[in-house]
Length: 330
Image 1 (tube, rainbow, N blue to C red):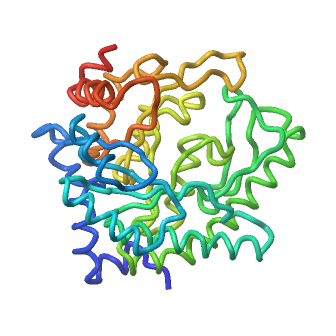
Image 2 (cartoon, rainbow, N blue to C red):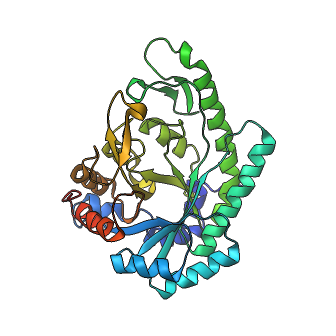
């Protein structure tokens, strides 16, 4: 049976959630919102596998956390990786499961994807991570340009009615596929919640270029539909900037945020994809404003770099500047 907020708050797993929060999942928003103390942010990088060489280099750069991505590792290898991290004083705070097919209409394909994600959750637990990043599904087809989206949806069912003002006929197939993926991925994640609860791992849904839930209001409604402390948001500060400012996403999601990814995007309306990803500090994101929005959201925890163009030492220095509210400083 799925664990929802009401039953969770009545059960002994409340203590487990508090432990997860202390380990880097959004906590302590009350004092931050009151302006008593600034929220605490911790630097992390995204790397494939645990190794002595990797952790030595990151620690030298002043980065003490890591999110690992290699899905070929066994449970035993993940446990060994955790010991290596602990030896160096590093924290493996998350595991990137990433792309899945939980929204598949084909029940056989969907079942296989559910089984794959279960294994990712177990790998995360073996690493000692508190979150497993999940992209539930991806759809294609003709869709509006980022600036054209004006989504009307039913907040109780998360079913999309229209995606633009005026004639939606050109987007009929997109709307149908969107609703199908939403319903099927909801069913899939409900199957996964008991596994996440057993392992003590939060399923952190990431906003990415999967053409689903592209506006913050819709993405939040999708997240809240699970009514579970084991399903939260892994918010990427660069992924959806072409649809809405990062500040708006942060303000709306607030305590629903489990973890943060950090990258930059330069908006160029009319260009392919309406712009491109660039090194942190070289894009359209206002990092001073974003830091204030993180404060308003009350987010305390890990911020994982998902950006190129800089060395680990330079990334570390840039993050120090952003965390201090001074912008990227480049």
